[in-house]
Length: 334
Image (cartoon, rainbow, N blue to C red; front, side, top):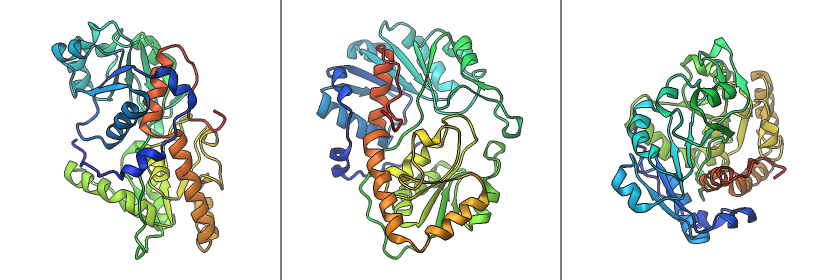
């Protein structure tokens, strides 16, 4: 799906805070594949990496041999979960001697892509930890150890991210709780009941054009709504990229608890975290009239996104892991 281009306020680029350890990656040449042509998070990351760390970046939707050899990358990062995209890339990537990473941006088992990518990547980066296997969600056995065996690659934890934005809330907005995403698929079990309990405004579309329009409207909608809901299957460390969108676009994150979420967000400081629909409704009632308290959480959440959760942070973290570092930079204690 082609995602509609989103104009970025250039002030947001300057607000992104890179960790000191990022300086060790200065001067790299990074080739990106799999991202859609107009991916706003990648565009922001590439500008930041070039300006601050003198990292030469190039994006090739499907890397071909001639252009890839001419660029001579130090690191290749492929962001995709689509088998047909990976099948197009892998023959070229196998010939490269530099470290190569597959960033698999979904909660799935390795069956669909393992035959295609086996041995082609030194690192595979997954947005969850350990193992998630619950037949109620229809996702199969999402086991990191199985991924490593099936793909013959080291696996690291790397959740999704967002581009940082400076968004002006709409003063006339009246939305109390907004949720952007699907409520029908089996893997989204429980979302509809939760949204109904909160009387949330739900936005979703199946067509690429309409989804692009919703994404264009999302920054202002998150920033202008009293609460922005995010919920995902309860896998360790896993959350939709919309959690990071809410934080990075100035919204107030109403976050359904998942294992280890407190290592990324502090309840009452960066987000309002709940377990059940009843708890979520209680938080909405409790914080509804507290506009100053909500605003303080929104500001703290945005600053956290600027320090921890942009695409630039994740890309640099992937490069550091491939070069021998073991840590994930996004936790609160890093």
